Length: 407
Image 1 (tube, rainbow, N blue to C red):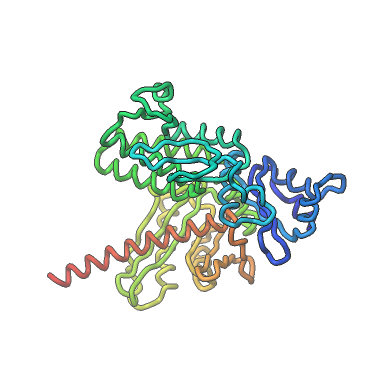
Image 2: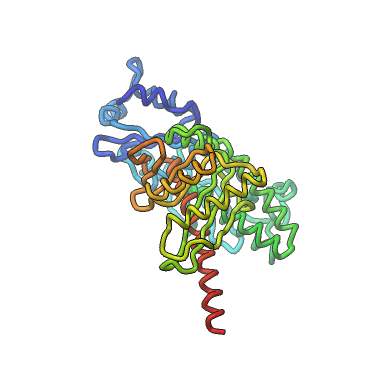
């Protein structure tokens, strides 16, 4: 195992995944400090049991994912162990003695930490390696998404008086809101934070459009609280991105572009914005292609980029730290020409769909990040969001064109 790589690991909480020579994950663990924990396996003075010493002999590479806190690492560790079932996590494969989170399937779902001998019909998340960390994690998330932990729910309990439980007598809109909290808790326990935040943003927008401002404000506060809980993780991913892609600065503000058309007709462009690693939907933009009538995605992309950044310069708006374009070397070259024409010094990358290859202007070869790395997962999220936004606008224009033709 390369000792330089071990020293380069961050002094931050997270999960590490040890791979053998066949690139298979053989062990997954969590750590308060990835660098300190992983280095313990390879110190000469370390006293390892027979099983661990044998495992270390097989390790050829180590991947890692950072988190904001150790208890968040606990959630991620359990999810990954359940997904990959590594050979040396054998204790956790015998789930009976380890804690799970159980969410009942009742009309009024309740949440418990259990060590099930026999599983009843409910949703289970785990197993987890530390009951104390798990309790602490649920304590934090409960302040954002309140839930009931009573075996026999009452109309009023101590937790309901301090806003951590809705009480068992809720009906109508309040029950719908409570079930939404449970759904968000499940997404969190599955490690789907991006999906959770996207859903909350959408719910807030819908409530705002309906002029249900009380609900919109409550969801806004949930978004802020959850973002604060995971902020150190969004930022860590952005720092990794800067290092992996040799960017000039940490990409706190990202703008991504995509083109959508059908054989050159109803051609559209779209831009999405991310701020501090989170969706910045107030700054999404849509473009109807005006100067290109034939099938030429490069020319369309160039038009969109020129329109966007000429306006940014003219109105003295904030420039992004990183521009992402959906595509390969051709799209990258096109975007580079625009930046040179406008004399803008902004980091630029393109990401191809098929092999998830990342192209930058400073390297001839593509950058290939580990498939399960948090940096790649984040970039895929950015790419997929702009692709979704572009297609939705394209479909809207096609529908309008079809309706006008019928008239």
